[in-house]
Image 1 (cartoon, rainbow, N blue to C red):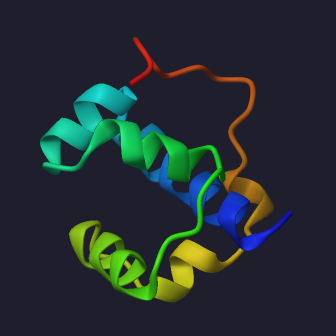
Image 2: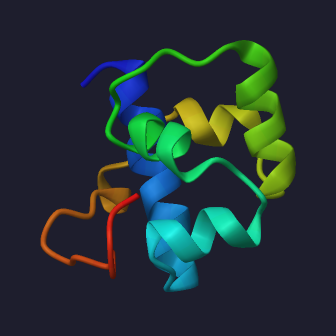
Length: 84
């Protein structure tokens, strides 16, 4: 698993913990749904500034966003009401 996928997995886990669809989650935090759904899927590289902004938004460390934790893998539970 590469770092893009790990960041995406961690963002998805945060969203799962809050019980929100992508659309509702990113609207709540005033983020671009289309852009961040691409991050969640591990499709794009993000800059350090974006990583820092995400960490600050969700009140976590940057390290938490880039650290793999097998307990945060969500693949059986679909929590999206509709994709972005």
